[in-house]
Image (cartoon, rainbow, N blue to C red; front, side, top):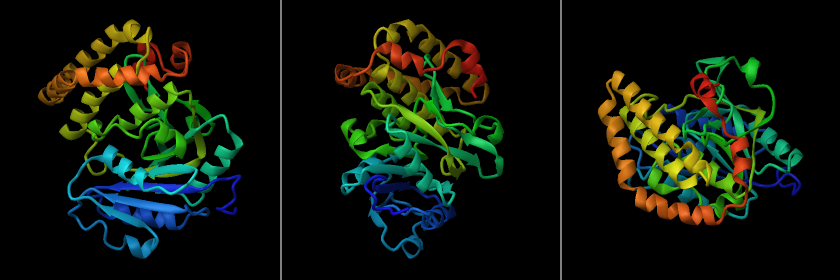
Amino acid sequence: MNPGDKKIGSIALIIVNWNSGDWLNKCFRGIAAQTLQPQQVILVDNASTDGSLEGVEEILPDVKVIRETKNSGFARGNNIALKSIDTTQWTVLLNPDAIPEPEWLENLMLTAHAYPEYSFFACKMLDPADSSRLDGVGDAYHTSGYAWRQGFGQESTRIGETAKECFSPCAAAAMYRTDIIQQAGGFDESFFCYFEDIDLGFRLRLLGYRCLYIPTAVVSHAGSAMTGKRSDFSVYYGHRNMMWTYCKNMPWPLFWIYLPQHILINIMAIFILSLRGQGAIAVQAKYDAIKRLPVVWSDRREIQLNRQVRSIDLWRVMLKGFYSLFKRN
């Protein structure tokens, strides 16, 4: 494939790094081995102190490295990179702890060309410790406001082999048309990290764009390799931002219909996290979310004013009912 072929399009690849250790070098070696090379690779480093940047420019000499003086978060890191993108048609995001297979980019681009009705795409993510298990096949969004990576922990050959529409991609490995991510205003930097990809995907759907899961675009994803899957850090940001995502984006009348469900799921989360010894951090997350709701509500007005789809169309791509919430696959 000719990477300059206008039928296929051009790619800017963004990696946001913070103390990822050896993962970043593994990620860069995976990029260097791609059968289709991106036109731009932009690495934003959030003031790492672990030496993880060492050697990356030897692997990819043309990489553009942007060094931040502090850890300003995953959301802002991506926005900084987005501002430096040239006129590339596609923006691809890749976490340092996501290692792509050689045909990952090529299969993303071929599928995007084959399905022009879709504008952003999710990848097949495998567990690096057991490649027969999935880390995810795109993100699901429940009417309660809860979200998760579909297929997590499941056998990859059982549920991960078919292309299908999903609510949004996990930003650990995702592709967006550059113009739509810019139209949506990029990531919400107040999120810092966690749920920022769900929020962006929701806003893109409100603008009328659709997401497709691509089973041939494969990466191995460690998932929260730097922050910890059940750390206080991930609990705080995940549960705070879950509330903001719902309040900003859930359109009328769905907002009011499912608000009792949203309140219940937040109460349940505090109870369950209390059993794990993380009740205090969960309460702090919910308190901080509520404290900022006037600002979030102001953002909501603009988002809903620009909505291009009917509520019923969004409802159709959400998961519903408590069975799907507890099954989560």
